[in-house]
Length: 319
Image (tube, rainbow, N blue to C red; front, side, top):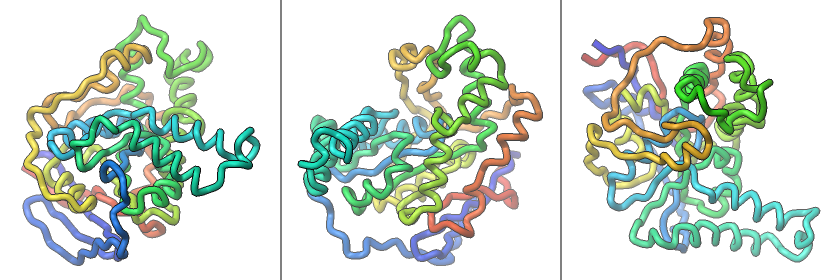
């Protein structure tokens, strides 16, 4: 028997849909568009963000099975977005001659241009850790867009990265800048958790989005729950983005990016296993280190946030 939580899906009106695996009990449901019109452009855009090693590539691999969708690993659109915005902002050579409307057109054009070869896909999901820190801009450019943030106990995020590091002992991965950062498990975790590094930046960006004014456009998806009950979770994802359900095959997934991973010096970083299933394992982190980072799951407390959450509880089981 695998212990499995109940799921609470907090919707826009502040009501909850409680999903106990095996049955669905609707306590209230209200997803509205507030009269917004579909934004003109190539496709409907949604965004995938959140913590690393928390299921964003797995989620993309699942979404890719739907022929109406395009999804994938982190794209360069986020970096292009930041670069263009920097060139248009105060302090740049052209900041004074590029007004806000032109900036909107330039930034929106990045998405349409990058995904121009996906014109046959009505729905596109772009993945980037920084989208959680860009919700005001995204909601302005794409009023109907949703952001799905994948999360996981931060200690297990660091454990997963540490496991990948140890699996490549003859490679100086680009995750670390020098020997001082990569020397031991303590220096590696401390480095990754800094607020401008892989885990720390994603965590602070997620926290900004979770407590911010655009939180109701955000859906938090817990990796553990996605891996244990993928169909239940995906049905809620489809409801959140207001798309008709597609029957996924959770036993035959395909996704890998070996060239990209090899360039980073982290083989297997984006390789998705064919079957969605939980994997119990012992952590590689020392107990004090694991305990330190296990306390950072702020999304478990929804009292001060309007975000939509598929939240884990411990009062249900799945045989």
